[in-house]
Length: 501
Ligand SMILES: NC(=O)C1=CN([C@@H]2O[C@H](COP(=O)(O)OP(=O)(O)OC[C@H]3O[C@@H](n4cnc5c(N)ncnc54)[C@H](OP(=O)(O)O)[C@@H]3O)[C@@H](O)[C@H]2O)C=CC1
Ligand SMILES: O=C1O[C@H](COP(=O)(O)O)[C@@H](O)[C@H](O)[C@H]1O
Image (tube, rainbow, N blue to C red; front, top):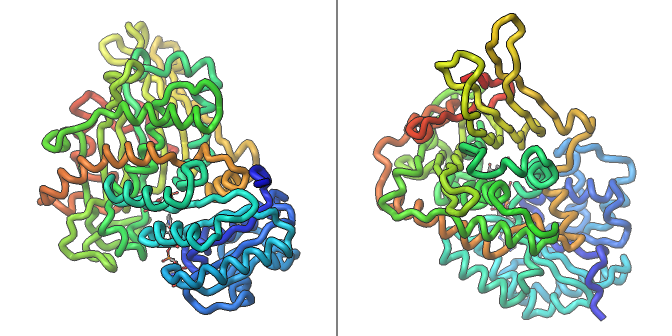
């Protein structure tokens, strides 16, 4: 009988010599081990083309742990004893037989009941091939569960995503596929549902009667770094908006699920994404703005423009910044804009969500001719994690004027501990068979459908004003105009930001 639920498993990491494995996966697996989540009945097999021995692999895993600056304890050797390496080219059918033998032998050695997790930390063109060989060569015929963890990008548009999905679905069922969106592993992204559904002071107000607009900013101060080859073909829209940003929109907009099960939560997110207002190609400019960074200053250092970065076409038309107004056509959200923006080489690294509430019907205080300061709920995703509420209080004098008062809750300050890295939480979920924080195919498809129109509009029309924002700024002026024309403004993303109007 298949052992469906047990967490003892063999993890096979394809692309184990690569950047993601080194920076994210090995430290996360080690943290899970240290916290006792892996017991002793687990094995990790690394594979890639380079001809490393298991010994060299273990040395590299240990180095990765030290480089990641997590605390490495004296018994790291016990942990490393669970790691093996096998060189293989994933496009060669025969090598899967060797891998299969190694898995069986480690299942015997570590008393693992046939549960197998295949992590594809490789370029996406290999995803379909690997999935298909895993099935045809019998690696999915173990006695336990099979789970396929897939990295982004899941396709580059809807047709390519459909093709990829069809390939992997030949070998794995939907409930065996765990599509990673690492934002769903972030503590405060997971907190969105709790803030909404566990607080009487928010849920009754969470609709178009009380909320005037929602702003999501995910800014980065880094440029494209070494990923120019990938990024120049992708751009900010497909790199960040299709996945991370729309996932946050879905979590903010979804209806309360009837219970907190994977299926119920996912189906509410899917319904929210289905309500995204589609645009015609010639309407895109009304709702979306694109940008590309030029040279500028970040932390007082001169940095080059995008077109001068390594592996970037010097005439590139790729956007490194996107701002947009997303509308959700349902009873709850009709008329409430969700403004989004994301970009590289912006003023600072920050992901924040600001929920701006509508004004009260009449201003008794302040200066009656002025608008009162709106109430804001700010969800700090990173680097700081927490919640702020901006409300009106009385000025400390004898006047009847009000002043914005900011109440802050800092998640990691209170717990006095580092919250686990997103990958650690997601790996833990995958080992436990909890797919809630992974994206269902329908979510992926709906997000691509929305984003494809924008991409097509931009592909048809070259941006004549690129570069249109200096590195170290908050993007092009058109991104500010997008809100100004609706009578709003972007709220600051800096923690010491000025929230007065
Ligand atoms: N790095 C990151 O921070 C992030 C990465 N991702 C995604 O994760 C995936 C991996 O990214 P990343 O680690 O950066 O990529 P890398 O280029 O660093 O690693 C690619 C890996 O694939 C192996 N490889 C390449 N060709 C073959 C082959 N034919 N057979 C077997 N192994 C092969 C390489 O090893 P060798 O040369 O030895 O064969 C290497 O281990 C990508 O899908 C990426 O989009 C997603 C988010 C963040
Ligand atoms: O998926 C991606 O995310 C990172 C940003 O992630 P964060 O956790 O640091 O906010 C981004 O730099 C990268 O381009 C993109 O592929």
